[in-house]
Length: 156
Image (tube, rainbow, N blue to C red; front, side, top):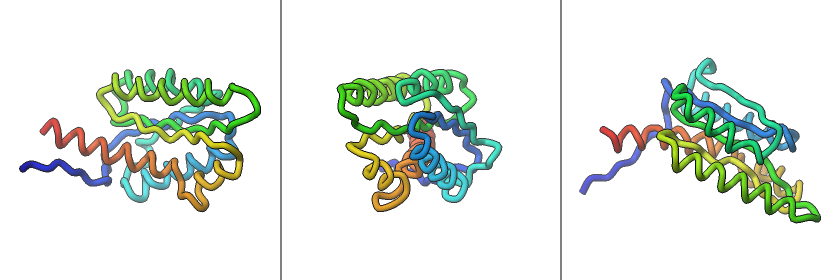
């Protein structure tokens, strides 16, 4: 039986992070977690990390696709936060961001990691951006790095 597993350390990786400006008071923490994980655990060099800001979560898929298509990056990480409000806006934005990023991931030859929070309230978002529930930005970064190595092992 052949088993493919991969490490997280990827020192030579080039990684793009696309991040939404809307709800940046949460997203800044997701970004800090992602960059910390890339550098400290993944051993990615600072010069190999590119951060691209977009207006909101709805714009993440387009920017992620553009980054993936450049062939400059080994992975793309999408970060953002959509907090439920009193209207159907949440469902549209969260759903389209999620399905759009999934579509980019399925149509790309590189990992596209999903680090978009979809929460009921601000408290839940804060918990998932570095307090009780960990940092989902860091988790997305670690996923991207591991998948870089998994794909290399599959192709070897």
